[in-house]
Amino acid sequence: QVRLVESGGGLVQAGGSLRLSCTASGLSFSNSRMGWFRRSPGKEREFVGYISWNGVTTYYVDSVKGRFTIARDNARNTVSLQMNSLEPEDTASYYCAARIDMGIRYSSPYDWTYWGQGTQVTVSS
Image (cartoon, rainbow, N blue to C red):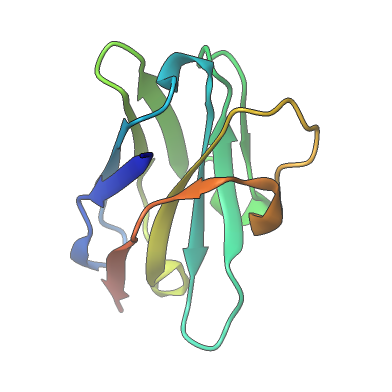
């Protein structure tokens, strides 16, 4: 059974930083692409970024480029999302996602197979 568990959410002031982690089990992590999504109240789940199986390639949504960084540790089956210069607009539940297929699409939640339960990030102004 595949399990993704996020941690690290919390309350932070605008301009601050948070680091989210996601620990995976039950899948071949080193062969999996890992992604992060977020959902704000009243909005659909939004793509944040993803990292390739070997960590060489990353993609980010324009709104977080230069502020967020995704990294992975295949020895520990973990992927992280370092969030700097946080803004109130970043307030959302953040979800870790995984996939093992080789599809070229990545920005829709339907492109991803496995999901964590989410962790809340609140940025105060």
